[in-house]
Length: 310
Image 1: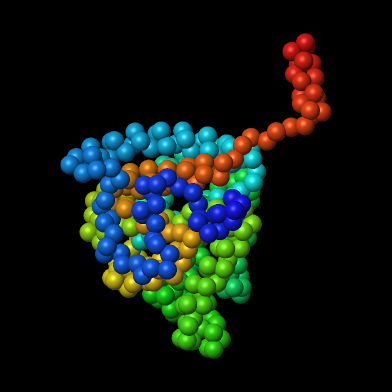
Image 2 (image 1 turned 90 degrees about the vertical axis):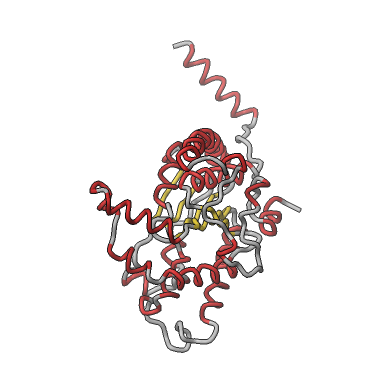
């Protein structure tokens, strides 16, 4: 079996302990069975939140160094692209995860895309159109802060926000959502077959922790800019969103593009998890720096000699 075939069947190669957080393909997911406050190491369970955060901050520093080395190899080999998909409720930590995890990588090898409400041009095309245009090329890491999954999450909870579609294929049509899940799975399978490694992270935050973070923004003037009245409005649909997430995770966690359900009540837990998952996935590709033919090596040797003799 070739590496490409292995990835298609088994998905990204990640460290053993990370695999237990994968939403098992073809299994009904119940988020109540996943602890949003879980920590990755048993030794951290008896420590305070402050102690856990300080320990995980140090862990992340090491992870950032490993990720920098992995990204350099990814860029040099130019064989695969990495697509990181981040989904989660408001305040789940998507922005912070991007900022802290990717702060140590070469910015020339990483692109972040945050997708806002679709515009007129977006609605004139199929729902995957605007995402296809910005997929990472080989050697690059692409990050989607929210993604095409919004089209089976937000519009599932608020169908009135969906683009106008003919009645026979619109959200009220039989099998509409199942069709969208199939479209996404087929789209991702196509990407994997063509050299894109897909890493999907659902940052799983509890309702109580979301409340705490929203209040924190309202209790500090310097954080007012982070707060939106719509955050509280959307919170009223919490149960509907959980149902939509469970359905989405159950339908779109596949062998070739699995979902990781990441405990996110501890911000630094989520950040170290994502860093380690991305690093181990790149390392699992068994990449190597490019080799050069003897003739080109001779040219390089001559160039070196010329520079040294100046």
